Image: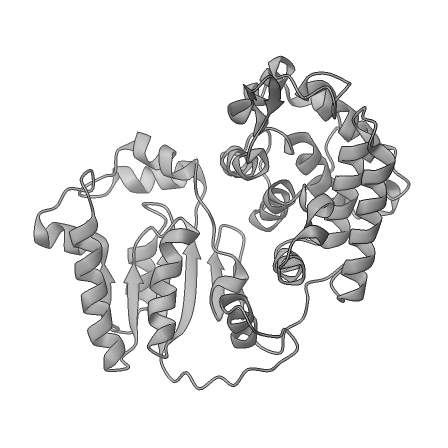
Length: 372
């Protein structure tokens, strides 16, 4: 991906949500500069004039620029006034979803999957350098973040976020970010992911409360469950035909068809039927494939926990194509999903992270990435 013209104004016409930030107010106690777009321009300017900017690779500059440009886009739908105070609850999480959807569409410009996801995670976690050290699970949170995005880039974005506003607590906030940097260096994950001894040890550490990241947890799993994830028409059925090796498939679409249940109604019976069939296979220690959209972590986690409790190793396979390919494939299906449903799902698509299972594989437009 080539360098862009690093100016926010270059993208205002292409990204209406970005331009609309000019009308979004902020709490003057922390943002004396005014609206969100003014703040965004100041953050980008702080980034471009930071001493580290010229030292960064082209890819890192592009990632940080997009993250800075979109870091507060979540304030557009979340900003409200409560008890006379302007607030934007969960704007970083909401903003990450918005940025992923925009960049998936190629707005303002196409960006590779791996770089896009770095942008998304920088946006999602851009407040963490200010608050992580006060959390009871600060170490686990830091190591989790390091699996998805470089902490040094996250700290740089957070620093520019602070320098790009007018507030009385600027010096205190910058000191907090420096402490965050030192903590990450101590933990060995400042400019690289924290290294676990195996994918199983990483999964075990993040799925339990009383574990240590230094321990090489024994992996006695001798059969695997494959959990497919991806929007409709991502290619999940095709992947099964090519890679399924005759394994049993638990397909939510097939169960819906079998039971005569519409996707538009309550899916409790469909999920219950799928889990009962899965438990029979798990009890027999028989490998199988769980085929569904599985677009949210809260949907994937109970399935993964169930499989893990039965002693299975879990591999997530996430599939994705560009928007036009998704829509074209969907139109060719015998029972196409309404396009507005695909768009609605895409606006809240939570792509699997490497710590969710023993292995996560990304089948994406540029390359297949396997992360054990």
